[in-house]
Length: 155
Image (tube, rainbow, N blue to C red):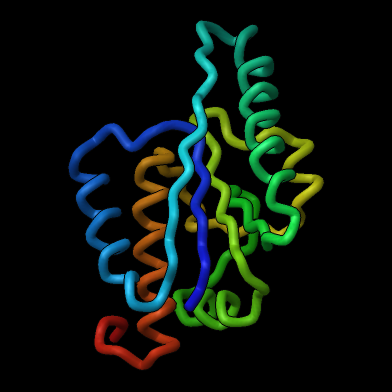
């Protein structure tokens, strides 16, 4: 059984995203111990606040990750490596556990974290709201598991 944590800045506010995430999490139940950790987003009120807010969110992420040195950290980043669903499944199968996927907030992920944790993936060339990214990630983890277990889902 895989042990996967998804840590994200902010909460999932939209019910339709929450419902989809919960559905895929339920489907993953027999195969993956999946947990979610939501960290507080930092408010910002203008361009001058953005860098400070991003830095404070980065400090929260760092504090969370430093308490879990045994985990394999995967950052979701627009410049990360792109995978097909099949190659993502193979990648997931190879990486050590426990696994922590990190999703930044609306400002992205602070540069020191990107430098410290070199393993990053991109879900798409397009940018998604963090709530949608979380839903897509959980669905892709489910798809990867069904590919590896040869279950009917990925055609």
